[in-house]
Every structure is written in structure tokens, then in C-alpha cells.
Length: 199
Image (cartoon, rainbow, N blue to C red):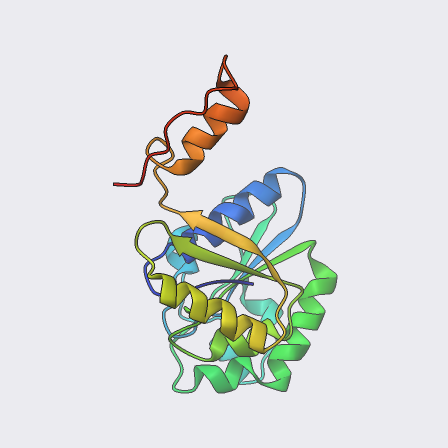
């Protein structure tokens, strides 16, 4: 499952990029758009969104009929569908739990796109039923209190945090660049380059 602390941190794009990368390594990947408040994956993969996860859950229909092929070999997408009035109730339903169990047997990798966790309860509900969570944060944009709240909400439900994706980072001006230079690229390892702050 992939979530973020707040909006516009690039979580949906991260999901799509991860899907393509994993498919290129030979894995069968399902992108499941569970951001029923602002579904985006259909736009990223150029798919129709008139039907999808929300329809399958509300009408108790076979979700498999809504899984779409993409232009990327190995990547399938279950779009979010029309925005429902009760997203949290749907993602926390028994039907959703069954769906997750079934797709996990059909695909090597399931990447679930969810809303920002600090804003709504949907991600915290889903986090209890997945193998792990990746938290996406926009470098220089997300407030540290927001980031801390996101971690605390995940910890509270016992979620396994697999890691953090630092998105929108300028590696040429970040501390990471200078530390990499010092440990891997400097001809004189005794002299540590001056640390620079992001601007």
C-alpha cells in the first residue's frame, strides 16, 4: 500500500512508476486504485473510469471484470470508479478484504493507491490488511508535524512501514549528494565536503 502524509506529494505517480519498474523485472503487477475520493490511476494509464473498484464493492459484482490491461506488459489496473459517498465504509468492508485476499493469489505484486493518511481514515483501515506500507513525502514541502502524524497513525494500527519515498528531491542540492560524494566519489576521503542545506 502506498500513501502520503498530505495531498500533492506524488504518491499516485510513484505507484505507477513502481508498477512499470516491477513489471519490467518480470513480475505480474496489479495497480489497485483505492483512493476512492480522488482516483487518479486511470488518468496515468489512459483508461476509462466509468466503472471500477467502487462499482464492484457497491453492487457486489465480480471485480475481475473491471481489471484493465495497460500499454505496459505485466501491468493491470483496477481503477477507482465513480466517487462513492462512503469511501471509508467501502474500503473497510468484508468485500474489500475478500478482494485483497483473492488478488494476492493472482498477481505477484499488488500496489494499492490510497488517499493521504492524515486527511482521512481510509488508509489506516486498509493498512491493517496489507503486507506493508510505503509512505511518500515531498522533499521540502511536507511539514515535519504532518510526517510525524502519518507515522503515528500507521503505528497505531500496527502497519508495517516498508520505507519512505522522498519525492521531488533535488539531488544536486541535497545533503544526500554530498554524503554520496564523500563516501563514494571523493579522491580524498579524509576531507569531508562541506554540508549544504536545501534551498
